[in-house]
Image (cartoon, rainbow, N blue to C red):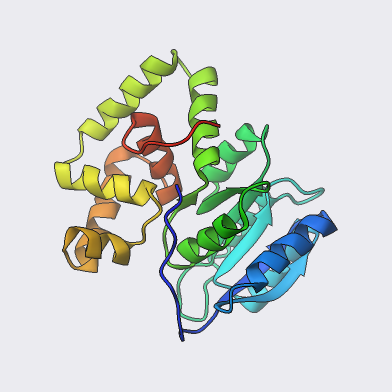
Length: 242
């Protein structure tokens, strides 16, 4: 999904902590995010354990974590951040964006269960990194189109039944939603925040929040990112091939 988050203009900059054990990758992430005046890098590290400490200390809007790091990896760090209920200065939960590479599909599935909000391929376009951080800071889920395609393909290859069976099962789950809830789910999967969805469908943001809560409960998923994967699997969102 490639939906770009809203422009923050004169609003308080989005505060970000970066964790990646590869110095060149970390420098690249920092350099890309630094091109956006609405994003502020408050700390960075090459260690997942330290990333948790930095997030607790700085309370950033978004933590960008490498999915695989020696010792405490991004998945374990994300889970610990979630368990600690780390919140930003505004009281919202710190959003978590995972950086991944091809071939890490099992890790992505684990990270989905651990509460990650966004997933980006390291070899993706710089604009996608900025869009992902902005979207997650705004409370949305963000899956790189290639991540979504890879996860759906991986589920089809490793889950019960073939691709057609999995799609049918996902469609059956989605069929239990109302028409409005399906519309909201598709927009969640497209990377839109509650505010953006509200403007798109012409309702107040509180109504969208209620719809999203109902969607998560009816689908039996823990978060927006997991709901987005299910929407892709059901064919509600067209995605490019991996």
